[in-house]
Length: 352
Ligand code: BDP
Image (tube, rainbow, N blue to C red):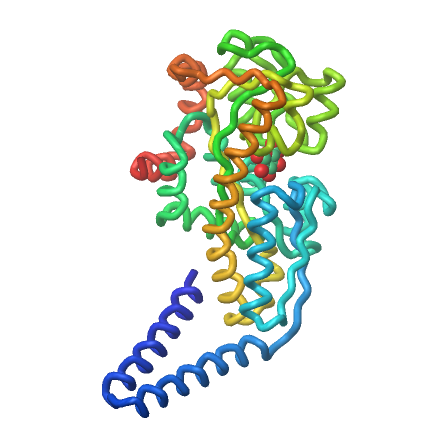
């Protein structure tokens, strides 16, 4: 963050000098001199970025290549390459080729993999603060989430990852999560007694208990076959994952209660980060932040498309019109954790 500001400050300063020269000199000559100067500065910046050690890093991603998070990762890699004049390259490994998320986080902590994009939910087991996103119904909508994420508290949360040997770079969109099953799901009552797969985070177990069902934590890659073979009766996710993982084929009833909004996190190994020069850290930081807008656009498109696709495939979609009974059912989970997450919950409320 700091380097980011410094670099931006430097660029502003360079622009101001160029503008001042143009204004003072007047006439065509001065303008073209200033133009030349600008070109030279740009070349110098590029030269500075191009000089230095070469790196080839790896980034672990759970989703396939056409998923919005993977597209965000690729955009990030492309920007890093561009900004470093081809000196820093990042190979994105989609479809959990480098392991499921829990294992990817562990490998990134150790520095065996340099980057990963994961969901905040499993991350909450490595950094307690991130558990806050697993608390149900704490956000009203996507705007509310982004107001929080892009504010000071959201940035501090990313920074807090350094105590877990991770360097948080940026958040990506992930919409809201809802339940789905092969059994009809049209009300809260229908969840009772079901075995529901959850992401690997203790708070999810408490949430499912409070809803009268029983939780089975497991990695994302195991969910399809577990639904198919009846190891679990239900799972929960957003439209894009429900569609992309083909879970809709084996769990055709989707009830839109939107219990969680769990942002995606792009991060780096702290060990790898600490070895980089401040200039290279700035390149990584800037590229990560610049990739966010692109990921959010891709997300919006894919969310719409996946809804259309699962509807066309015949999934039964029920919209929960009154979420109050659901919120009341899980209130004990919030109450039990209010004290621990007080500061972050206050910041989330303030972003409302
Ligand atoms: C998806 C997230 C992915 C998680 C998955 C899950 O994008 O990172 O692995 O949920 O449910 O929405 O585990």
